[in-house]
Amino acid sequence: MKLTGLIAAPHTPCNADYSLNTEAVAKQAKHLADTGVKGVFVGGTTGECHSYSTEERIRLFKTWGSEAKANGLVNISHVGHNSLPDAQDLVKAAQVSEAEAIGAMAPTFFKPASVDELIDWFALLTKVAPQLPFYFYDIPSMTGVSLDTADFLRRGRERIPSLVGVKFTNPDQDLLKECMQVEDGVFDLLFGTDEKLLEGLELGCRGAVGSSYNVAAPIYRQIIQSYAEGNLATAKQHQEHSVKFIDILYKYEYLPATKALMEMLGVPCGPARPPLGNLTENAKTSLKNELEEIGFFDWIS
Image: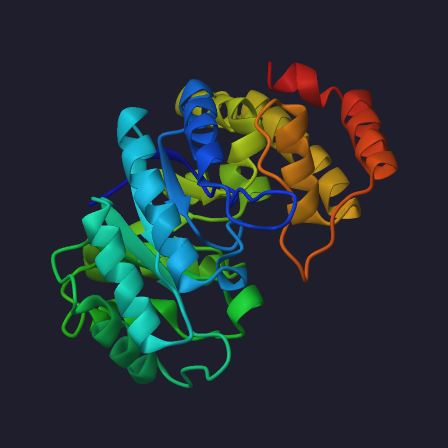
C-alpha cells in the first residue's frame, strides 16, 4: 500500500458545549474533496484524539467511514491509545467502518523504552484486525517516544504482518532517508511536516498527511504540481506561502486557530476541547486581518 497526494488530518467537530458533533463531518468531507485532498487521517493529533473518549472516537470513525466513501476519500483511522483494550476496540471499529488502513502513535504515559517494546505493543494492537494495513504514526514531539524508526521497520513486520509504513512527523530527515531505504523502499513514508512539504518531495515521499491541508490544500497542490513539472522556483514560492500563514496560526495557538479558520472558510467545526483554549472574537478578527494582509485567501482561491 502506497498513498499519494494530500491526506488531511481533519479536526474533530464539536458543539459549543464541547460535545461531539458528527453532523458536521459531511461538510468537512465535501470541503476536502472539493479542494483536492485525496484522503483523511481521522482522529489523530489535529483530531484531539486523547481529548475524546473511546466511544466518541468510534462514533467518529463510523461517520467518517460513510462520508469518506461518499466523497471518494481514502480513509485512515487513528487508533492510538494508552489503554490496550481501548486501542483494540478502536481497531475493530475502524474495520467495521471500512477504513482502508489504520495508524497509531506510541502510548504517551507509560512509554515503550525500546524498539522491541514498541513492536510488542503494536503487535497486540493490530492482531484483532490482521488484514488491515497499519501505519506507525511517528510524532516524538507529542508522544515523547523517540526510537529508531528505521530499525522498527526492519524488524517490525515479523511481528506486525500488516505494517505498511510510517506517518513521519519527525524532524530527523536523515532518519527519514534511512527509513526509505529499508527493504529497498518497500514501506510507505507519509510526510508529516506541512511547512516542509517540498523537502519531503525532494527526499522521495509521494504522500503527505497534514493539518493545514484542511484550510489550504490549493497551496500544497501547487507545490506538488510545480515540483512534478521541474519548476522548483515556483514550488519554493508556494512553500514560502505555507510557512507564512502557518507562522501566523502559531501566534494564536495553532489548533484553535485552524478551527477558527475553518469557520471563516464556511466549514465550522466548533471549538477546541479543553484543556486547549479558544480564540476570542477579537482574536478571530485579528487572525483574519493578518491572513488577509499576506494574501492567504487569494492563495487558496
